[in-house]
Image 1 (cartoon, rainbow, N blue to C red):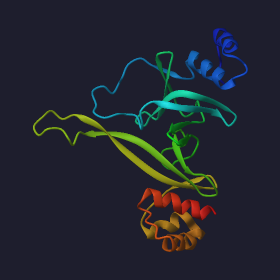
Image 2 (cartoon, helix red, strand yellow; image 1 turned 45 degrees about the vertical axis):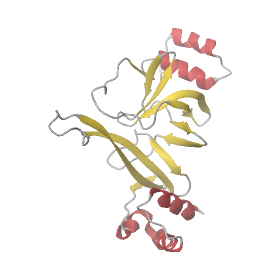
Image 3 (cartoon, rainbow, N blue to C red; image 1 turned 90 degrees about the horizontal axis):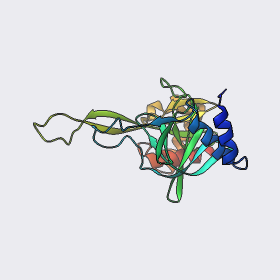
Image 4 (cartoon, helix red, strand yellow; image 1 turned 30 degrees about the horizontal axis):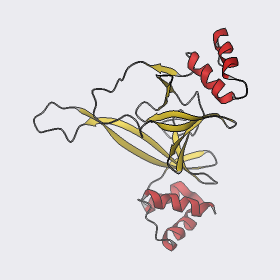
Length: 222
């Protein structure tokens, strides 16, 4: 359980009990066990960006009933943290401190959650919810550092961020990485594999395409 200082409790009163999400955000900001202040850019020497997207207006999900809206946030896919700009400062939240967040990219908000147990990784990561239902499709976005392939020949080697995305199918709390070869579908969908194969055939789906995988899982849930 989080422990807050007297100063933090007083700050809660000023934020207002009528808005519990903003109050929670204030407490996390003032308490070292919540958001982690970022004082410098540790990635300045690397090319590209550690963020999945640029900072934009979104929401921070503290619980199912506790949401702070209209926050300036970005997902650091290299450090696996949600970063928020507040009062001219930068604050980072790890998955164990918040339930998730929503990136409002235009008219199609993107929801990210923590708590899904990813094989060989665990549950302490943020994943994007692509389809929610009996079969849930999630995307694990992360970035790695590799040699800059665009560096001029003969120049000193530099590092650049590289995007990686892995799709997982979740049923009954069990997450399995989606393998796109037909012979591996049985491992993911079990007794529903014949139905999956029929849907792929009937709708001419290519499960190597992300959009077709999303459509497949939606059809499977109907």
